[in-house]
Image 1 (cartoon, rainbow, N blue to C red):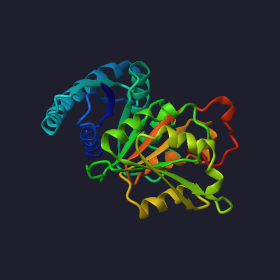
Image 2: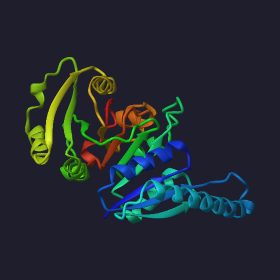
Image 3: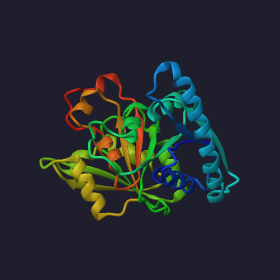
Length: 285
């Protein structure tokens, strides 16, 4: 049974993301945990009373929300439970994930906002939580997953097993995987015909895989160009947790897409081995 965490603030964006997740795993046994968080800026001596009221309000809202979900989803394979925490959403996800080790966290992206430096819940989770995260744009149609694109630079990952859940999903949906590489002007596709590429193809040998190369000096623009031309039901990127400098200088391509995704984005968490962390890197996933 897969364990899926579904944070919600009862907004349209979070509801859409939850409906997407339920449809995506309609044929899979899952325990869905719905999470609502609440905080207060009141003085400490009265905060406890305010937080009690906020929790009661959250429980009432969740009760109505769960009834609606069960009308949308009556799969016998699915079970639901609720969690409430008086902290920020990203902090709550991190705390719960340490105990439960979720297979996936699913978040809605409203598309509101224009300052990546301050970020959003999605970028905060991608940055700080050691979990695979699926980010669903507000206007995403609920359709079968048939075409998946994964941005790859063939840099070393800790273990190809980080893609286990992705491989299972591809096989279950009979979906095609495109390994997308953005080439700089001075690069050619031949440079990537090495051991790393072979290992990727060998690992995904049980599913349909093809390679695609696109030239662009900017990785983000190259991926967007691909998405404009080719259908992709899901974009996959590896989130390598680097130093704080990559946030300050806005260098993580994954977090840029998490902030304003144009298609559903699956951010796969990978712990970067210490020797590979380089604060001088300009472009990182």
